[in-house]
Each structure stands twice: as C-alpha cells, then as structure tokens.
Amino acid sequence: MLKRILAVAALTLAVTSISSGAVAATGGGTDPSAKSGGDAREGVVAAAVSPSVSPAAEVTTWRDGGVQNYDCPSGRLCVDVWDPTRGTYKVFQFYRCQTHSLSAFYSTGYPEYENNQTSGTNTYFERSWGDRYLRSTAKHGPRTINWDPINFIDVC
Image 1 (cartoon, rainbow, N blue to C red):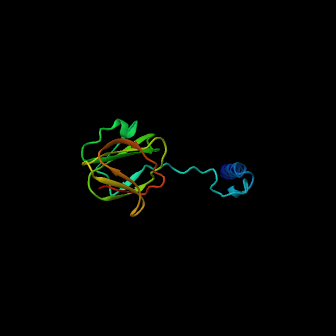
Image 2 (tube, helix red, strand yellow):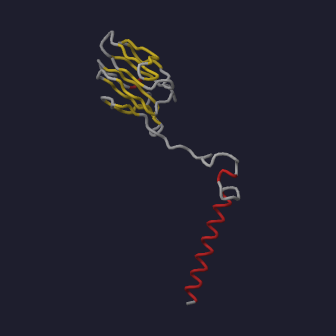
Image 3 (cartoon, one colour):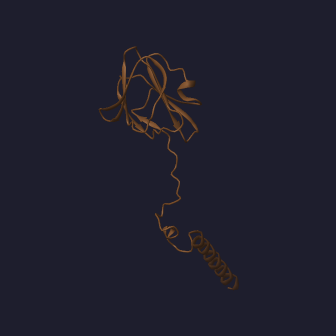
C-alpha cells in the first residue's frame, strides 16, 4: 500500500512540474497570446509547401539553377520556381495547350521561364482567369519572371 501511495505522489509531482514548466514557457499565464498581447499563433512557423500546378505538367523535376541548367525540349514551355521543401528549383515542362492553375509559386530566388514551343506560339501568364499579365511568344531562351501576381499559365 505504501508503494502505491508513493507512486501516486511521484506521479502528481511529475504532472505538477510539467504543468509549471508549460506555464513558465508561455510567460507565466495559461494563454500564449497573453505574453505578447498578440495572436496566439505568433511565433508559429508555417510548414514549407512545394509549388504545384493543376492539371499536372508533362514533366516535373528539380534542378540547381532551374531552367538555366535544364535542356527545355523543342515544342515545350519550361518554367522554374523555388521549392523550399527541397532547397532548389522545381522545373515544370508543359506541352499540351491548356490553362494550368499555380499553387505556392513565389518569386524567391531568381525564377525563370523558357518558351521553346513552335515559333510564333503564344503563352499567357495570367493574374486571374483570362486577365493576361504577360505574353510570351516562342521561341526564346530563359527569361526572368515575377510569380507574385501570376495565378495561371495558359499554354498556347
């Protein structure tokens, strides 16, 4: 019986110590926002998200240097964007004439695109569906791009 009482006392002491440590870590209160007077989410770092396109690109790969170090095949549009989940550039290769929605495309680093489609073919980079921001007429080598205002790529 004495062992049982000692075990309960030790468990109670451990739980109290852990709770006290948690309160101290939040600045002495039970509400994490009370420390700074701000949002309870303050100091929380968002998880990195890999950029993606929908529908999927014909080919997706990763390359240090992005499009600069990628041989964009004839008849294709190739774009790169920084992928924080891998610490390098993610390269998307497009062939089909269709509109692709962009997700998590940010202008970190030095993003570029190369339009190696059939000469005279137009690709449009759009803010919203049909709101054209930039036109690219094939063929040309790598060019820089600001992904921040762009939400869609209308390939040919």
